[in-house]
Length: 63
Image (cartoon, rainbow, N blue to C red; front, side):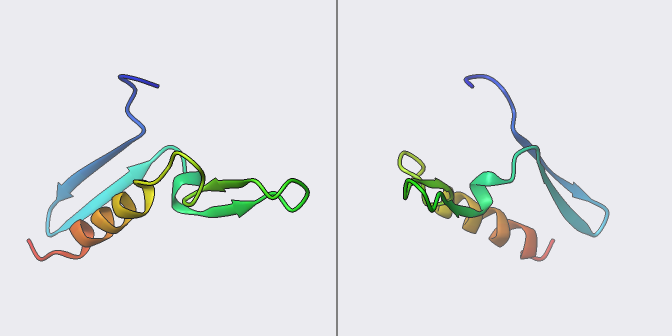
């Protein structure tokens, strides 16, 4: 979806918040019938793991 935001991050007071409208990219699913992977480790989603790692790193950084 080009041009559509799927999440937002914000520094708020003494903390930070990250909100995303879709959680599949942060989890891994496997269709046991077909063996197809969805989410974090699915084909074409090679950047999901690094993105999740970057978000988590940003959330725990001291302000």
